[in-house]
Every structure is written in structure tokens, then in C-alpha cells.
Length: 281
Image (cartoon, rainbow, N blue to C red; front, top):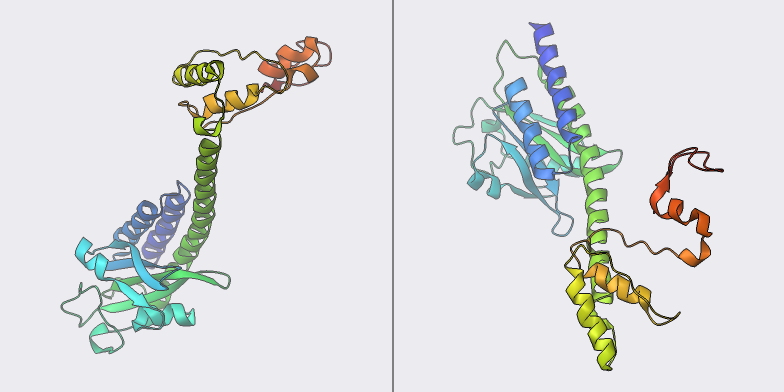
């Protein structure tokens, strides 16, 4: 029986780690982890609370065994209830019977009958940084391991969650910065940023907008300093490829015999000096 329980615990930890490394979908991944804990470890309910950085409230972002209405009610301030005490102190708490614990607030309203239900709550933390709280309801019987086993498993899972949340925050910050940069580039190279009054210049702008929505290859001709690259950027950032890179190459600085390889790449040994495979621009 003990080995069987250990196998369930290891299986739950392994599956949780796989889910948390599959993508950066915060709510979906954490919900899957709670479902894994529910099915493998026979938890009655479970919640992942994360600390909202502005309001400093603990809010449920994923749960098992709760309705949407109950989920929306699950909010705590630091130090409030068992959940708030755990994030305040940074240590696990075990409540043998929530029906006899006045600090247990049942904020979600998901436990109309509280007697006989045990509650385990562990911090989600990475070193000294605390992101939130992982909590589960449990009804203990002879077939289950002791509370120490549950706390040990939940501590491992909460550490995995903490690492995932940290990486998710970095990913989200980078993604937000990328979207902001895209917006700046579109604004900078939008047609209104090009100033010109002559009929010929206006015809160039009209032609630029016309070809921006096509897949045609475009050749821009003009003397040095007339704005060819600026027009090229304008076309790029008004096109369907605006989210892709814009790569400018000064062809005049590349020897004629190397231009093709520089732009389109070359295989190793294709010509003298091609000592390795080269990716084009």
C-alpha cells in the first residue's frame, strides 16, 4: 500500500513537471496541475493563489473542485485567514479539521459542511521570493499516507509552480516589451511620419501603400540620401509581414562575388573560402 501511494506521488510530480514545461499558458497549465493532484492524490479541492502585485491581494488563478462562482470569491489579503497567514509567514500550515478552526474563513463558500475536512496550505516560493499559495482539502483515511507525506509532495509541486511562474513573468514582460516596440515601429514608419508635398512624392506614398498588401518584390531606385530605406521600412510595417524582422543590407559594401552568398546563404564547399554552411540574410 505504501509503495502504491509513493508511485502515485511520483507520477503526480512527473506529470505536473511535464505540464509546466509545455507552454507559457498560466491559467491552463496551473489548472492542469490541480487536476493532476486531484486525480492522483485524491484531493477533494485545490487552489493556486497568486499575489496580485498592485492590489496585494491573493487571487485564485487555478482550482480543482470549485465552481466559477466559488472561484471568483477566493480573495485574501496578506495575513487574512489561513491562506493569508501562509504567504505572510512563508511556511506550510496544516489544519486537521477546518470546522474547528476559527481562522479558516471558507471565503469561496465551497465547503457547506466543514467537519472532517483537513486543509493543507503551502507557500509558492523560489528562494526568498513568494509568489502565492497552494492549498488542498483532504479527507484522511487509512489508505492515505500521513500529512507529512502530503506536505512533502505539495512542497515539491509548489516549487515547480514557483519556477514556472517566475519564467512566465519574464516571458510576459518580454512579450509586452516586444508588442510595445512593434507599436512604436508602426507609429514611426507610418505614412503620416513621411512629409512631402510634391505630386511625385505623394505618388510614391500611394504606390507604397498599394504594394504593401502584396507579395511582390519591390525595387526602390534613387540617389543616396533620398529616403529609400525609410520608404522600404514604411512598406514593411504597413504589410502583413510587419511582425517579422526588417533586415537592411548595404550591398555596396559587399564584394560582387560574395553578394549572392551573403544574401541567400551557401553550403559548405560551394566556393573557395566556404569552410562552413552559411545562412543568408
